[in-house]
Image (cartoon, rainbow, N blue to C red; front, side, top):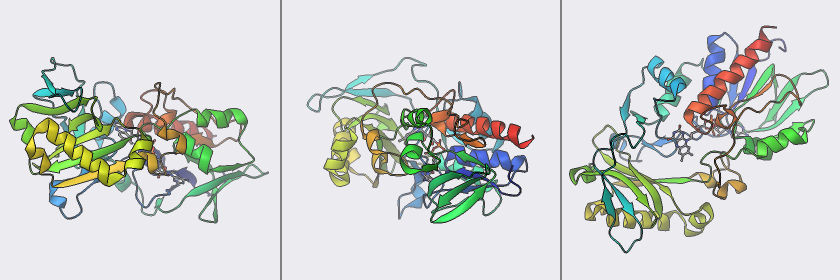
Length: 363
Ligand SMILES: Cc1cc2nc3c(=O)[nH]c(=O)nc-3n(C[C@H](O)[C@H](O)[C@H](O)COP(=O)(O)OP(=O)(O)OC[C@H]3O[C@@H](n4cnc5c(N)ncnc54)[C@H](O)[C@@H]3O)c2cc1C
């Protein structure tokens, strides 16, 4: 390692924060450089501006699946975070066309894999990990634009016009964001660059809308809140009610990013309320608040190509930088061996990157 220079972690999403906490546990000094004005990356749990009492609502990830996601399950236990089961009691709705009434179905027991949600949203996980880090570990508003390898083998980064020396670097950005926004000097070998571009960012082309109500009134009608729709604009809807007693429904969109951008947020939310009213009756018109986040137009997550819907499940897995330089490690959910795309993948990739780094560190 280069003398007293810290390990620099690029990105304060789940992967970057977990990498920092693991290094910190092992007594390795590290700094996280984060472009946004907040931590969490694709994790975003927002309150309604003038109604914090309603709770926090997830506009990024919502669930984890304890049966096969052991890393996040264990971490949640260690951090003593409170979780609750996704509400799924009652009938689901299936909508074929806006002109036909939705069909009601009772799903067989076990048809949905058991998933857990966080009290206070997934942001609770982010905040709890960040709270374990020494003060001043995280620098917000710091967009890394270049990673440089000097002739003597030392590494540095450029961010906000400043040059920052690093003993090692863990890059946790979505690989396509690295390829598009970070300059490497010397240049990356073509195969490594192609590997970055070929790992599309999970959910980067998606958007989420959350409709918030005084109470989850659909439960009183024996409905679970789960909807599968070909009519849209929402394609898949779930009960997103927090533990505060308020009600909420969230949905993923069936319309592509380009169409969403053409329609604009106001029109989209109008169509969302129209659809919810069609499905759940006039009570659905009485929204307390609507939240919306289109990830495809967020430059810290998505590149232009992400607006194209994914045709196949992406092939995720480790990216190694050895052909460019040692002591540069790629983490982030898209680089995970397993559960790539999920929160679980983000955690596992951080564990792997830190384990690889520590092998060098102890030499
Ligand atoms: C709508 C949606 C729903 C999802 N649902 C689920 C779910 O239910 N369950 C689940 O397990 N997963 C879900 N996911 C996926 C989950 O959010 C991700 O797997 C996880 O958050 C990725 O974490 P990460 O740290 O790898 O990447 P990110 O969270 O993307 O972190 C990368 C960080 O790098 C920062 N950054 C970018 N460019 C720069 C730069 N140049 N310099 C410095 N910093 C930079 C970004 O601001 C960001 O903070 C969902 C994602 C979305 C968007």
